Each structure stands twice: as C-alpha cells, then as structure tokens.
Amino acid sequence: MNKATIKVLIAMLLWGSIGVFVKNISLDSVEIAFFRGIIGSAFLCVVLLARMKRKKNLEVDDQNNSEKQDKKSILILIISGMAIGLNWVFLFNSYNYMTVANSTIVYYLAPVIVIFVSPVFLKEKLTLKKVVAVICAMIGLVLIVKTQGTSSANIDLAKGVMNAFLAACLYASVVILNKFIKNVDDYKKTFIQLFMASMVLLPWVILRNQITFDGAKSIVLILILGIAHTGIAYCLYFSAMNDLKAQSIAILGYLDPVSSILFSIFLLKEPFSIWQLIGGAVILIAAFVAERNPKPKNIESGDSSL
Image (tube, rainbow, N blue to C red):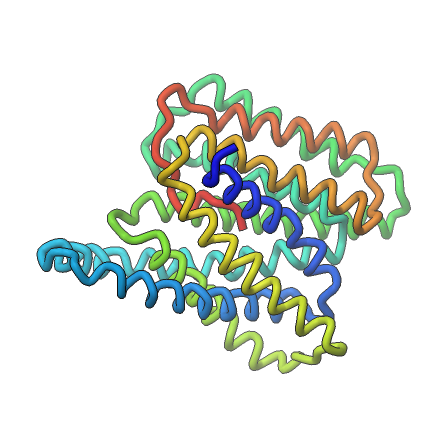
C-alpha cells in the first residue's frame, strides 16, 4: 500500500467518523456547520500561505492566466460554497431524526442525483445503465423508509430522510458547479468554498444567538471537526490525488459511507434493521455502478466527500 493510498484512506475514515463527533457536540446543526467552515477555512488559509511561498518561482504569465481564471470562477465558487454550508446544516440536522448510518446512506444518493440531472446541466448522455442505477437507488431509499415502528418514529424518520435528501441535492449541486470551475488550485478552491460556507451561515448564527457550549468537551470536538475532519482531511485527499488513478480514488471513496455505517452501529450503538441494510447496499451499489467509467476522467475536488 503506497503513501497516497494511505492518505486517502485516512481522509475517508475521518469523513466517515464525522457523525460520531457531531452527535456529541452540544450545538445545533447551524452552529456546528458554521464552526466547521470557519475553522476549516482558517486551517486551509495557513496551508495556502505556506504553498504560496513555495511557488514564488512560477512564471508571471502563468500567474496572470490563473488570476483571470479566478475572476471568471469567483461567482461559481461563492455559490457552491453557500451550497456546502447549507448542505452541512441539513446533513447534521438529519442526525437528530434518524441514525447516522441511515443519514449517510440517503446522503449518498448525491452521485445518483448528479447522474440523473447531468443531461440537462452537463449535456451528458443518460445511458440505460445510469437509468437502472437511478431506479435501483430509489428502490433502496424506499427500503430504508420502510419501518414498523410507532407513528412518531415514522414522522422522525421522514424528517430525517427529507433533511438528508436535501443535503444530497445540495451536494450534487456542488459537484455540478465545480465542473464549470477550471484551472483553479484545489486548495484555493476549497478555502473559498469553506469560507463562503461559514459566511452564508453567519447571519443565521447571529440572529439565533444560541451558541452555548456544554463544557470543554464540545469545544474540543468542534476543534477536531474543523481541523482534522475538514482541514487535514482535505489536505490529505488533495495531496494524494495526483499520485492515484481516478478510478482508484472513486473506489476508495466508498470507505467513507461504509465506515460511517460501522461507526454508527458499533460506536454510537444505533439500531439498524435488515430493510435498512438491504436498502443501503442497493443505494451504494447503484452509486458505484453509475459512477464507473470505462475511461476515467480526472476527479474534481468538489467530488470529494464532506
């Protein structure tokens, strides 16, 4: 196992364990998402400054071209960053209504949503394989929603599914928007998106005025979420991208939802029924099949996980 593979594996395990940390932070989803964005962007800002010092020998023409491209892409970066912030809010909020495992599985409808809308926004052909993948994913979602609990449990599950599905839609929009951003450094792109994710939530956080940490535990966990699960995880992921094939990165990416499910069951002790197991397997397989390409293209930074 080479160094690049290890980096991606660590990043995926970090992203997979996000639910465990969020569940133990005594803040609402809006505040958690805000702090994750502001701490993560601050960490990446430091990384960017360090990288800029190493790139002082670049030719002036290359710098000018990059600056022009940055100006063309700035609006898309701002919009995608706002979508990321709202995406986190809905995903973290879904944890309040159903298990982390179920939230993660529904959230992984995002690749299937991208496939479904790509003919409209990306002018990509919708093949029979992709259509079947979309249908299978919907069947998987129905299986997850299938429950024999009380009416109140059904209502909570419905709220959880809706929040996770909205998060998946927002994540899919970020993936599509990132397809239109060209020649922008991955670290710079992610810094802008994380910063905008926190800025779009800032007015909401101020108006709510509900930032109350329940002891030092929540402060430590929110710092870990911002630094390790956001800043370090993205740095590991991006630094490994050039040394691995796109197909390898795509396959390794499925360690994220799998590890999230395992953490949910074994660390959080959350229940997981046979119907949810089957539905989750169907969705993940459908997403995997839909994403497979005979000639893999370069992975976009926005196509990474959380």
